[in-house]
Length: 322
Image (cartoon, rainbow, N blue to C red):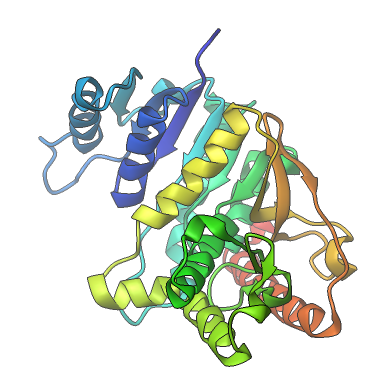
C-alpha cells in the first residue's frame, strides 16, 4: 500500500515536533520545508532537522522517509499539508497582533500548496488561527472540507488536563468539548463534560470548574509568559491527532476550525469556527451539530463575532482576499 505523503511547512518548534511525531507514528513519509536563513545562508535548518530525526528511527523503531528542503517542488502531491509557518507570539502579544505579517506568510504558502499539491487536505496551525484558515482557503480555492484549522484539539487537551489535575484522575478519562474561536474566546461546555461518564458537575464545584475553564482559555498565553514564546508540544500533539485521523480514515470526532453553514444557530455561516468534526480521508466529512443552551449560544455568538472581526482585518489589509 502506498504511504501517505505529509508535508509540514515551517520547520520551527511546532513543525519539527510535528515531523517527529508523524514519523514515530509511521503515518507516512514527511517533507519538512522552511525558508533559508538570510543571515546565515550556509545553514540548511530543515535538512539538518530531517537528518537528526531520521537517525531516531533505529532507536525509536520507526521507518519513515524524512526530507528537509527549501523547495516546494519536494512537497508535490502531498496527501496532507500542515501549515505552521509564521511568527510565534511573544510576551505581551495577542494572536490578533500577528494578523498582518502572518497573513502574508500563509498566503505565500497557500499559493505553493495550490500549485504543487492540488488534492491535499490542509491543516493550518499558524496564528491567529481562525483568520489564517480563511486565508488558506481563499488562496488555495480548495473545497472547504479540505481546509481546516488545528484549534479545538489543543484547546480541549488543555481543558481536560486542568480538570484532571484538579480531580486527581487520569486525563485519559476526562471527556469534554469546546467550540468557537481559538484562544481567549473559546467556548468550553462544562455541562457536557464528564469523567468516564460521570458529569464533572457531580465531582467539582462550579467555581473550580470555572477556574479550569478560564485557565484553558488563557493556556497559550500562560505558556508564552513562562517561556517567552508560543507552545509547541501540545499544539503539535493536537495537529498530529488530526493528521492521523485523516491518513488512517479513522472518522475521529475532533474539534477543529471548519467552514460552517447553519450549524449552532448559523452565526458562523461562511466562516471557519471551532466545531466538532468527523475527520477522515476526505478531510472534514461532517460537522456534528447540536442545540446549545441559551448561555452557551450567547458565548458562541460572541466568539464567532471576534472571528468575523479578525477576518475583517485580513480583508481590509488584503482586499483580494475579501
